[in-house]
Amino acid sequence: MIRTAFGRTVQRVRDLLHDAYEDERGDVPGWVLITLMTAGLVVVIWALAGPALADLFEQAIERVSGL
Image 1: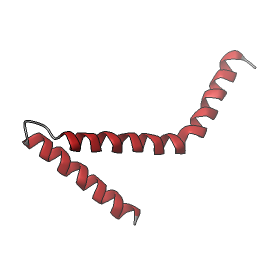
Image 2: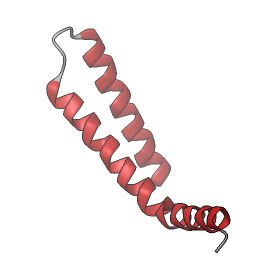
Image 3: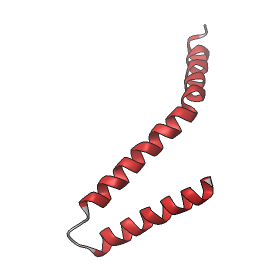
Image 4: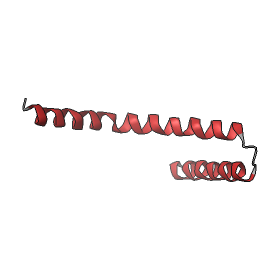
């Protein structure tokens, strides 16, 4: 199910990019959708990787400061 949804999302983004490329005036709603989807991906990745990155940062600070 996730791969199918992801595949549809990728195809939708490809279609939007192709349409925007073909239309010289640009496609404002398409670009808004791409921006929102990118922001959503950033939030999801940050939510998944945030704790690991915070631990990594704390370990690096501890090694540098010698605490």
